[in-house]
Length: 416
Ligand code: SF4
Image 1: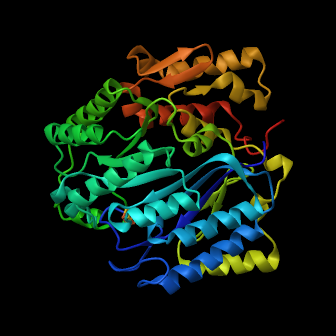
Image 2: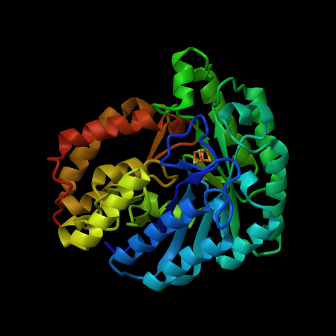
């Protein structure tokens, strides 16, 4: 496995917690902002921890993608974003032409701060739009309004059109409580009129412990039924395809040349660095998740400083391959799917063994193959869009059950 060329930095601060969110975040109140506003000392002390963690990581090759996510990283000032990038630059180096993404929230920046972010080195934006409907935004617990969202899109588009920004993504959530095909159609139309080069569309997931979870338990949330949900997903795929977008991953659509390079790192099975509370790193095939609260993260960091970094962060040859199970999970989400001949090389399967085991998998997938939800080209299998991608979980479960029967669970100690 090559040295990781990608880094994720987690900025956990938000104004307040949205009703569906269970991310590791620290709500700072509606008036919070990076350098001087409410919560600025909290932000600065966290950034100091983050710098310390970056310094601890073993040095490697320079980075080709950086993703600053959260949380609401746009609560930070351009100077703070620039300092973070400088720390990465000093420690690893950042390649010329690297993709550097910042997640931003519509009501948390203005033109001056956006310009500042771009001058600091950001060249890709991911905008958490979620919905263009004020009542839906309110029900989600979002702070921004439709009007603020349109203003944010205009500002971003201006910088995209004049070439200061290489690309940007508009993020929406589908299958929300009470959503109907007609209302979702309107949402897609507005999104396409704004003309972002990349759109991410996530299905709502009700996470334990969230306000939505509580509302559901009281019977106060009416989610779209299976038929409506499937129609909504199919409409998304059809509408965006007709508008020239390619669905390069289950939740991600891009115009030519705008697929996120950073996302593809996760899905291709390459390693990455991760920094910050709640962040996961996987530089050499072993995942390492950091504690999800600031106090525990600080303790964890101090422990690393005193006792040496976690072994998963040090290059060790026998740990240098991502488990095959993980590669199935991420690989089936991608348009190109997975090539079993390539993946199974690491187990040293002979040709006959590969054929026998693939036939066993095809027996498990018989119905999905017959229905055209999975396609096979040689040893490559991929899910069709939209039918296969819409039931990806069931198809994956069958694959993992197959894997249990044909592997001896030795994928953590590969032959090569
Ligand atoms: S802004 Fe994003 S990270 Fe923050 S609470 Fe809302 S959904 Fe969660």
